[in-house]
Length: 189
Image (cartoon, rainbow, N blue to C red; front, top):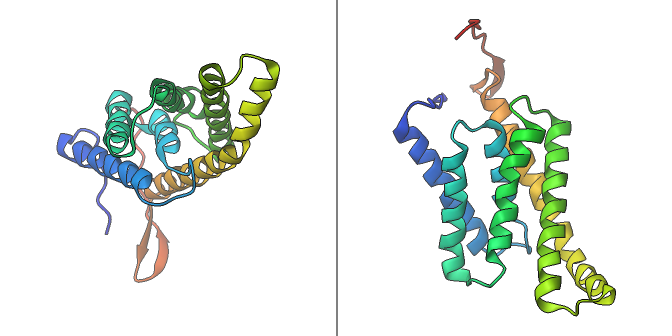
């Protein structure tokens, strides 16, 4: 049995947002490969399908603040937060409400690349010599982290969009069998 999410039910929306904050905080505090968290994918997904992007943006910021209170803050956190929030725009503009696998992969790639380029440029400006050699050294040192960022964004984006697609497809599992449920579509509602 499944319970449909009613976007007009504030208690349900609050519970979903609270649950996502909990998952996001746990994903950062529990042991994991570097940069392999669901935060960027959560933003991409929320930008594409959520009714309240501001509420989801606030949820991501709260999750980051709570987990950073434990992990520690640094001077480049505004850049990190900004790059994560850029995934809302990528989700809204590139992936959109009519998401398909190609759009999700493209959105994940763009978000991962943007995060890599912008955050590492900020690291170069703050901590490396202001030379081409310093820039090359900074980005070379960051390559191992990019593979985890990309893998995490792809895995979690696939998970979020896949679960959402299944949950809205009308498929149900009854006694271990997958069944199609016919739902009448009313035009104009």
